[in-house]
Length: 338
Image 1 (cartoon, helix red, strand yellow):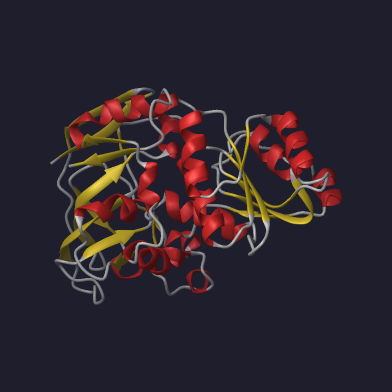
Image 2: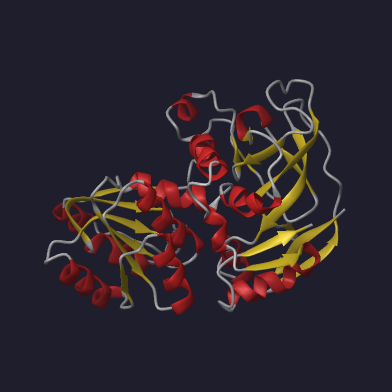
């Protein structure tokens, strides 16, 4: 089997990898129908996260179950399934309150940029679709594995309510799907912060009512101007830098909420500033598994089409070009077909 392996910054190779096998009786092996490059994959690709050894890449996946371990009871060969980037038993105390990425037995699911994938804790991690999906649904179903689920969690964590005003910091795939999530949750006004025309157009298609091109302090000023000096009810932070986090916090009205899902890099918060801001701050690695049944239903019934976030599709053996296209911002998100 061949798959993507990161050796060093900007050194992704498509090469032979071991074929995954059942290791534990709770495992499943799935044949990948589609995978993709995540914005978080760009952190190690760019060298922001150290790469100390060759690392199989990819954590977003959907496909058909080929084999299951002897203890797997709810997942069967032949089913089309979607799973989270964290395996979870879905039964521990943390899972039961909806935080499967903090499962007491969690395992990161990596190596999905390949034709086959081993998924631990299959019963708790994988969710089957109602049937074998048509080809045109696969991009949207794939997005649920991470970016749509993460955008949805950002909106959920920010307590987006019907009729509310929402600001979204970040115009990558997660931010754009945060716009879609806020719209689906009934937000009346959605302010997307973006400097890129193609992303602005998609944000508007997903439900954005306003576009703000300013960043940092200038972006905060613009949000305040648009909200009569008050700030947004809910702000989705979908980047993970110091500037984006502070922009989100300062754009939120007193009593409002920030949902942060950008993986933090160099973010430091001032306790006194937070104390006097009167905002709610909640986020972390998205518990995608919590939302999968609802999101699969929305996609299956044609109520949302998050697959539009994929603006480039390549064969898996061109994974190096997929990383370059996203690194150079020539693509929002690249779908890969084995």
